[in-house]
Image (cartoon, rainbow, N blue to C red; front, side, top):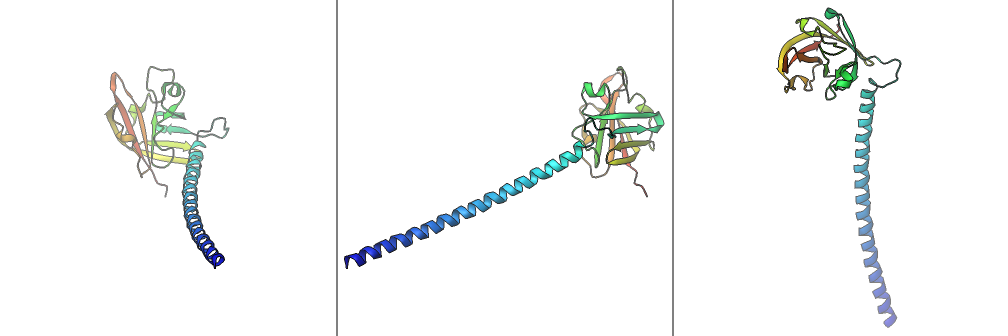
Length: 193
């Protein structure tokens, strides 16, 4: 009789332990699946960022013999190379690309000196009028824009460089003898028919 009671107690303890182990197993399994799903989602986002970053960086890859990144403005006989950034070092040799703007789709923002430096790519920008053409060339292709806006803005006004769904190009340079003002020219892409 005593052995039967002891066997029954062992059976109950084992059953409770097995149930607890199953609960722990189910809990850990759910947590692991959740972590794996979160990890996969994170990896997918990181992969997408890398793909987008690679596509963007292919335009400015240094040492690439086939690199094409330039702006042309026929009216003022300008053909100028573009480089990333708008620091003094960049604009001593290139038209600078505003890093927070697009390089292809949306609003492309460019800046250059217009006087007082060895290279002043935007020295004749003030001669542009509505309807003049701006040609933008990259590894992705060529876009042609027509000048729509010519305005003078304060040097703190960044609204013309905001992201847009419509393809635009925004050119900014200083205004002579007005340190706090900038000439801003914006073109809209001409759609090929």
